[in-house]
Amino acid sequence: MSRIMIVLWRRPVFFLLFAVLPVRAQLLPVPNAAFPVNVLVQSPALAKTDLQAICVFRSSPGNTLHGSLLEIDEKLGGLLSQVRKDNLFSGELGETLLITPKPGTIAARRLLLIGLGDLESFSADREQVVGFIFFEEAKRLGINEPYFAPTVLDGGKAGLDTGDVAQQFLNGFLRAKATRDLLQHAGVSAGSDPHSLTFLAGAAHAARTREGLATALKTADHH
Image (cartoon, rainbow, N blue to C red; front, side, top):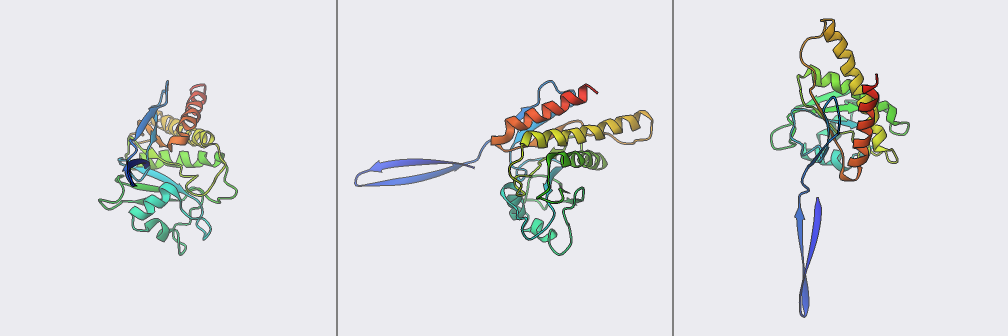
């Protein structure tokens, strides 16, 4: 949300008026991509899609939710906090949980949680596992245009290059796609694959995220 402060001066007093305006979503296509990939500057709580994925670290009292994760948790009535307690969804690397949100909560029709494992030891290359899993889950659910938000920063892990995170994720995603292409060519894979990917990022990280995605696509083209 962006906040605009308007000052009206009228002697001997002045008045402060605050207008809170929603930030318009911005879609940034990754150029020259053989497989369509877009960066969407929008909160995953607000993105309208058939499938929105977010990531959470291993559940522990010290791993609190921030930013968009907290926003989603609040819109879902604290559901994320509840499933991360009492040895339910542990958030181990690769663990998944599919949620069908109630109408009027978040905009996505389905929400997929993907575990990232331990927060302290997390590095960007772990996203390759996440990317592979997300492609397979999107295919299993019959989703042509899945949306993904890494939510690493909102999970409490600072200091990472968001471009590296995006690149490693897409490496895994495209590796899963190449595997499925091989299986389909062999006639042992049914159903359709995702046709595109939308990767969510905050405004401050959108440019670097798109650079990382572009690097992954170039690397895949050379194989």
